[in-house]
Length: 305
Image (cartoon, rainbow, N blue to C red; front, side, top):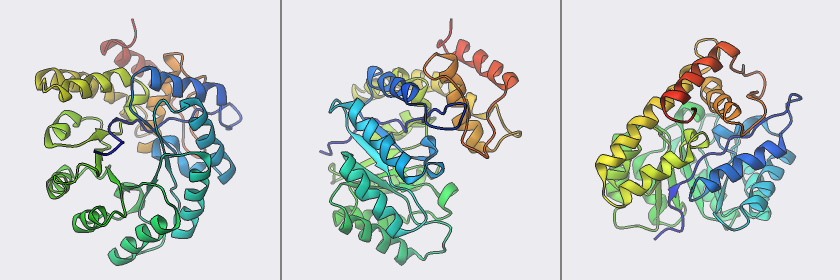
């Protein structure tokens, strides 16, 4: 079996009023997730606003995360950048900082063919001896990872897993079927609102941004699924779907990404985990009116009295 499984949230990185990382708040985020029972931490993904951090900050985020986790749970590090050699540089830094695995997207901005994308994953894996998780997120990188390629790379040992944030649950189901005989390959969904369904299909885990707000809820859902209590899993998923509505409160004044991660940050600020809900510029942060609507959702889902 893969050593990675369960609930592995993509970790929110809070900012100071000066748009630097708020390290005390970030420590509270990590401890909040670990206390919530999660099975791993995914740092420097979309929810971490990875592309807004410079190289030195990225390295420090990984180092700090590994230090706080202190071996209690693994830290998976995103090495996201437009091109292969830049990702290799980030991957080497992640390895040196103590990450347990690296998470790699297809190249972006540059136009690449399917064979070139496949070469890209091979180049990164050849350069850095860490488990490599392929990250399928076409909304950000503008290419979808091909089913046959994913299966081929998994069977050859190039990738150790897949984080599917494509929204194409039908394709993900086929990948699960194709690799059903390979429990060592970690296949996880990045969709917060269909976790019960995807676990029923045989997925090995979930990477929920909303888990920053309510890690206990996702762990409760995971545990229900593991014991085969699908009614309890469905009930928890329905509650989390209501909580997920916090991600839409900034649209259309903000971008969808800023509304989503900003919704997480705004809820976490209200729950006393972080100090600000600031987003990296030029993204807009949620305002007081939007925060009030999030308060209402937090109360309706049992997170605020």
